[in-house]
Image (cartoon, rainbow, N blue to C red):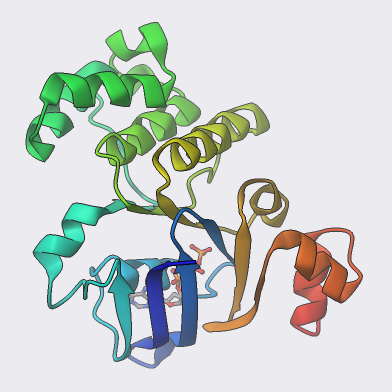
Length: 239
Ligand SMILES: Nc1ncnc2c1ncn2[C@@H]1O[C@H](COP(=O)(O)OP(=O)(O)OP(=O)(O)O)[C@@H](O)[C@H]1O
């Protein structure tokens, strides 16, 4: 299988806080890959380094063969990134968001907007101001803004953070449908291990800035004799 994202021995400290100690990963093309771990484990910092937004102290990143720092222009063209703290413009409608972003992306704007509208699943709500949206609707709009460009690699930081079970399911289905349709590679972070089990082909457990296990949910459960990924995590970290 071809490797879409390769990360070798990434390290990043902020002053005396070591956010990422040593992270090595290989993510294959077309895969939905989960970075999972507790608060402060280093998931966001890892994603930001892969996205080329935070320069690692050491180690290397390759996205579809591109270095996100030395070849940032080309890397940005294949990459989509949803930050955890992303927000909408409250005075714009959902549709205005789609049009605004599509015009920045270039290409066939109408076609991009049409695709973004479909991906969002927001239907008639696209005509409402985003300030009136629920958290789940905002997250779906933000995700569709990232995915409407059909990035080869999408990095999604906590895509379902703060959402109730129904909204989470809609967002997960959106991600799965997009990945399947476009054969894109998705790396998402989460501390919800049960959810990750449902959506990801493979997962990496991150704890204290290090990868402690990598594998498919079913292989990991078998290896640790566990009935779910929470149990695997506790056993893998010696908890
Ligand atoms: N810009 C920064 N300056 C200082 N410390 C930082 C910075 N960014 C992250 N950290 C610290 O690095 C560590 C890892 O943070 P990171 O956000 O990568 O973890 P995370 O796994 O994404 O956590 P969460 O699940 O809570 O989002 C934490 O101790 C955090 O406080």
